[in-house]
Image 1: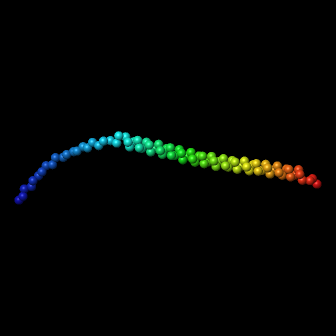
Image 2 (image 1 turned 180 degrees about the vertical axis):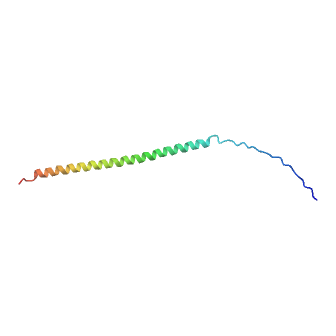
Image 3 (image 1 turned 45 degrees about the vertical axis):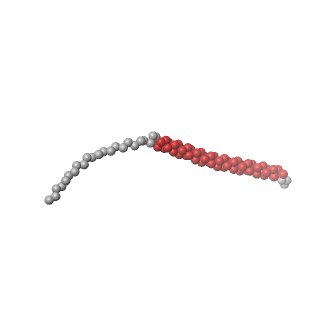
Length: 86
């Protein structure tokens, strides 16, 4: 019969110290957040300017319509005065 041999193994725990990132990850995250906020503000400002421009055009068109109505009324009155009365 063969003899069995038992071998004891010691457990080893190895700790590895890894240097931290030094905050570079946080810096990149903050820069990205600032870029997103600034981009959002620029986009909102452009949309607001477009809306203002559209409102200004609509107001100008309304004013032109009112002026055309007044001019038409004045022309009608002038024509009535110029026409011979029977």
